[in-house]
Length: 579
Image (cartoon, rainbow, N blue to C red; front, side, top):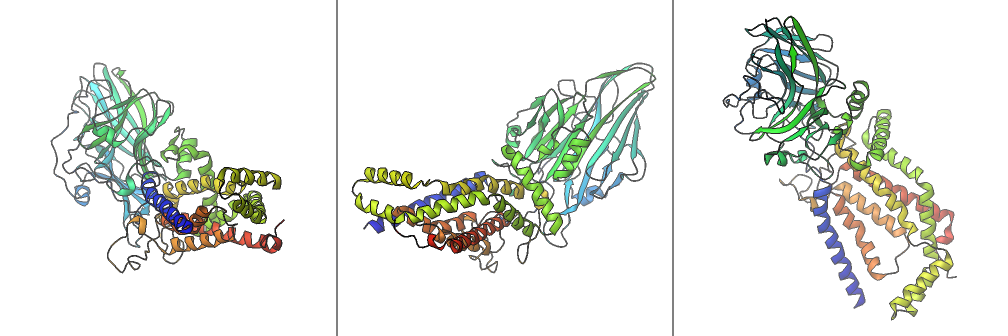
């Protein structure tokens, strides 16, 4: 009767953990249901092309009213309309739209939309009259004069924007003011725009300049949703801190967020970032708003400046449009003075631990050329560093095994007096100098390591679409094979709770073998729970990234090898005599 009760209790506990974990994992550890596919961000259905905004807290610039809604056309059609200057660098391709001087065409040369061989490159920016409009724009606001707007057609000097060939755009109004934008670009993802206004008129003019990122629609891809572990949406370094608290849903409520200073701001996706950056040390005001339904905008603007006749004023803005590569972001942070740009990757509270894990893993990958093997070697290094702690765990487990006969005798003697039984067990632990919790220390230490590796695999683009071997083509995605649909033979995707694949099965088996080498728990309910736990973890871990399962399997195998070594070295620990 007691055995049946113990089994029922163990099963109920396991079921509660499994069902509860399914909820917790979706909220705190979201995993993509299939290999990452990142195209242009989905846009609004009926999107109007927004115009140049006013400076926060200032009157609107003349000509800055929104134009009528445009007909939505495919990206290819929008790009084929002419009036464009090509952009070519090793990292990105695209073009500048001479209508409005917008940077609205950016694709990332090094990154593909899927893991398929002929997959097209990821598109980050798209023109304003497309379904997935997303672009950067710079401009001016003024009082009493005409300034260039979204419909202004600029004249270009220079046929192509490359790291060695800048491009200059020119436009003049009818009252003697000439506007000039000098675009330059580096070999990665940073575009610099030097804005100049020359006043050749007869009276002084008051002018302000601004830069903005405009996005129509929010991401609909399940990978691109804000979670407890990763912020997706408006972000930046504003008012002296990194901004992770503003979400699309806040903007949808009509809230506007204004800031007295900004180091940079824009919109972040899981792997991509579009941001505007003022000159180093420059004082600007900034805002994150929604000028129209399903239209999101990040903007910074400078104070109005008086320009006397015969003089000119220049300002510089920078635009980041590209992948959130760790070393690239850190390079801009250090070399360009862009404060906390690396925080575009939402490392969270454990950045101090996660970044070293990433750097070690990335270094191993560069030496070996395979991220799966790099993860396995990282596991070996971690196990080596934790060897003294693991030895203490093994020693504690061995002591527990040696005194198990005495523990069983005490349990039999005081089976009707649980309080006395616990007192005697505590006395036995004290007399034998055993800490029953010491065996948990390595497990506790592994939790931050596991979480750090989870964040590294989930957030860093360096891990995206990295293959291991055989059927594992993307270590940042779950195991693509599932037993329930016969490895894809049946046309459906199993729910995450039942998405058991070969890696999850191997994890369950290795954990089962590892638990068998541990001393048996004295409590009957614990015994049943430990028998079920490996298979329970098999279900829990199945939806996680393949790289995480590879880490855990390698760790289990190393634990088994270490335990076998210790048992061979000290055979008396395997057959514990009664003292």
